[in-house]
Length: 169
Image (cartoon, rainbow, N blue to C red; front, side):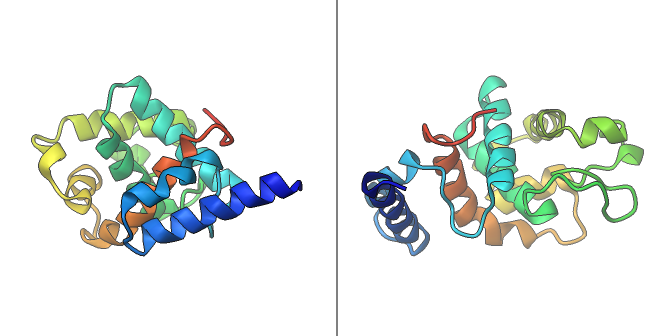
């Protein structure tokens, strides 16, 4: 790794830590120069990049991307799971028996994100709701407040996956 690459990665990491610790968000501008989020693998960030790309393609505002990424963090840890509670599958743990799609569909990150956003669009006033309330309105989880703890990291992930060095879906 070149010195310049190491410096860029360190700067992005410092900016992300500043963001997560609640410092001024202007200090996080460098966070979008590298696809680095401490504690997340390339696979997880690629899944997040897919979620963001689908939202962008559908015209969903950035707040919706944060809702979707926070939801996938809670439901699957941003991993495309082939198992779950009852028949829940994929990034969002969507249930084929509840009309989300077939097992192959809900385990397609693009399809799963599209279905999540379609349902989010159907929630009246979701843009004014907290992230956890909007996520719960779509997911109808047995743990309705669980999404809130992922909001700050979801914002950082959404910023990071839009950077030029991140895998684009």
